[in-house]
Image 1 (tube, one colour):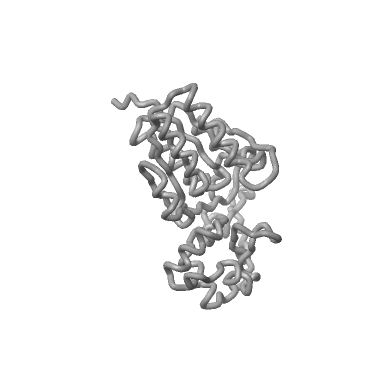
Image 2 (tube, rainbow, N blue to C red):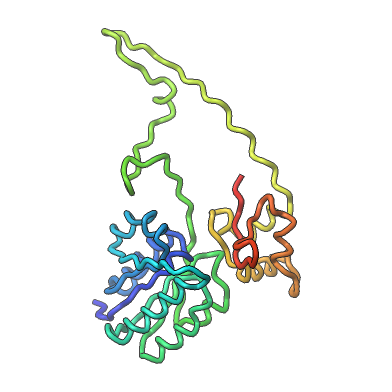
Length: 257
């Protein structure tokens, strides 16, 4: 039985909720479960994912400070403090952000084995190289018809039953047919846009991607030259891609039709 003390610190503004769920399962499988489970996020994320956090016994650490990297800084400060007080053997950081490299080095100096867990399509080689070990997990977009309560999936109604749902009048069943309008046709994607999505599947899944990570993937796919700018590549396709924040963009997001 593994007796290592394990901390799981999650950059919940950087990885999707299903990757967080996979990360908890991965830590359970390899280390027997984390002793500390904290997710660093905005208040909006904490409310949106409260059901999952409660089910996974994750403590949300809400960051109310404004400004770039404020959540990352909160995680880093907490990590060093916890490494001193809790003395973990292993620290698992769930994030695809390469900015945690100095934190990884500091935790290693404190005698911790530092393992990273990141999201496929958002994790660059420089991020993986900083850790003692690294696991890349794939994001899988899940669609929900509706919810009966927070975090509780509603029961789906079979299409046939919905189309011919009947009511009983006396002993006769009266069948009511419903006519559904055909959905509008999906817009045709330009070849360049389609190629970008193939190189960056995380965009199609609805995630924001760091521009520097996007540039690496686009160069690997031959869509961007070594000295080319990813910002200039996305700019002509503003109908499909949104650069964030607008004035000084460092992320890109897919504008789903």
